[in-house]
Each structure stands twice: as C-alpha cells, then as structure tokens.
Length: 351
Image 1 (cartoon, rainbow, N blue to C red):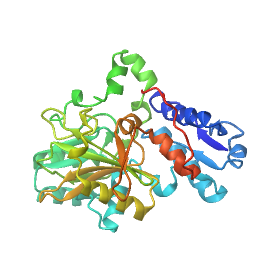
Image 2 (tube, one colour):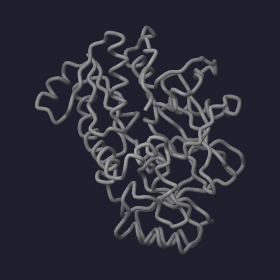
Image 3 (cartoon, helix red, strand yellow):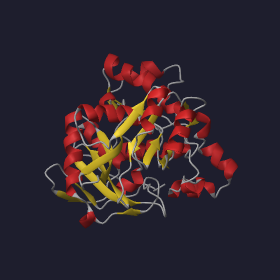
Image 4 (cartoon, rainbow, N blue to C red):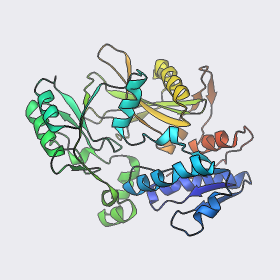
C-alpha cells in the first residue's frame, strides 16, 4: 500500500496526479492522505511507502518537518523524500555547511549570524557578490551586490525588518519582471492577478527571513548553468541559459536539451555526491568556477517534472546512455518499489 499526501496548491497537485496515474496503470494499491484528517495516523501505520512531494512554502515546510521524522524513524515506513534527501531542502545555508564538511565543490559562500561581523566582512569583500535568501526557487530572492554600499544596506535590512521569501530581489538592479518567468507562471498570470493569487499564492505562506545574511561568490563567464538531476542510478541533464542582460538562469525558461553540450564531469560529480550522501533524488545546478573547475551553487530534491520528461534519456552511473522520455514520478516509484517491472502510461498530460 502506497500513501500519497494530498496537496492544496494547484501548482504542486500535478505531482500527486502523476503518481496516481502510474500506480493505477500498474494496478498498484494506493490511498490519498491528509494530515488534517482524523484517521491519518492509523492509515500511515498500514503503509509500505509514504510520498509527500513537499515544496517551498511555509505550509509544506511545517507539515514535512512535523510528520516525516515520525513516519520514517518511529513508524518505520519507507518515505519519499526520506530524511537524508530532504532535511536540507530549500535551505542554502544547510546545503553549504553539508557540502563544505565533505569538501564538495559548492560555490564559496559567506554566512553571518552576527550583524557586526557581517559589516566588517563587507568592507573587505571582492565585488560583485551574490546576495541570497536561504530559501526560494526560480532565482527569486537572488540579487547581484555591486558595491559595499549595497552590501551594507543588505546587512542592515536582514538584521532589522528582514525580507519576505518570494517577494523579489532586494536591489533595483534585479527587476520584478525578471522573476516568475517560467511557462507555468506566465500561463497563470494570463488568467489575471486575482486568479493567480487564489491558485498559487506563495506570498501568503512565505516566511520573513532575518537575523542572518548569505553571500555567495559571483562566477563570471557563465551564460548558462547545467542542471543535473540524479534519481537513483539515472542522471538527467540540460542547460538553462541566463535571462537577457542578467546573470541568473534558474527560472529563465531558456532550456537546451542538446546532449553533445553536456559536460560529463558534472554528471560524474553529481553521481558521486548522491551516492555518498544517500540521496534518493537530487538536482544540482552546476557552473564553472573562475579557473574553469566544476562547481554547483544549489541543490534541490524536487524540480520541474516536465523538464525531466523532455530530456531524451538519461545516463547511468557507468555513463551508459538510455534513450527515452521518463517522468521522474515513474523513476521514483520504480526505486521505491524496487522493481523494473513498472510500466509508464503512454500519455500523462503535461502541465
């Protein structure tokens, strides 16, 4: 029996529907659960697998961090994501600390929990540098800090009123029109701002970030990043090109699936890290450092499933290529069920 947690946000509910379509196509028993229902915990104890594809909102964070440790550690039900895979999700500070411990090539970051130490550091920093909140996706909450004056302003803001996640970048050099440019958001925006808010209201469930500041090294000469997504023994990869007159590529919607342009060094490194750290699923955003070395600046266990499906196939850890289009939900279920005898429906609607 597989239990799938429901989702109140329309932009994430399609994950649930795809798991359901694959399970139904293979005649595998499942149930839809909701933590707010009185029988939730009694149903969980009957499960073999529990799936909760949680996302960036405070709503998701609060639920996931409340129930996953109990379900996995105390009840003993196999979870997706499991705790190794998701404890650091949407927290770039945790990600940096984790990768620094293992000396993996996470882009150099400077994190301060003390205002005075932060103000001392910005006086000697080499500019430009990148300012980020620890949470957020699609390049929201990311700005290029060009001067010490801007850096001081950011420090003062973060150690006073703070910034709300998802509210856009802090500096005027990064304009609101640069944000929310993915196809999904563009489609929703055409429905009108009120409908957009009712169907995908991230702002009402996003937290205020304060009393810390995160800077990251700016890596010039990167017109794109390479998104490598590891699911079990599969690596899907594509390049994402920067927005016009901008340094950010995440959320640009400018995706190239040209296999010949993928640097296999990124594939090898992503496999190495996921295997060592026991990740079920992980997307890495790779860039080139100033000396041309491979670095990655963020990781995420969840991602756009349509972008994965659009890949022409995947590499395994021996770098053998496997042709075909695969939904990540199909790959997740194969790994969770520990079977190769799972069929993918011919048609699952793209959203």
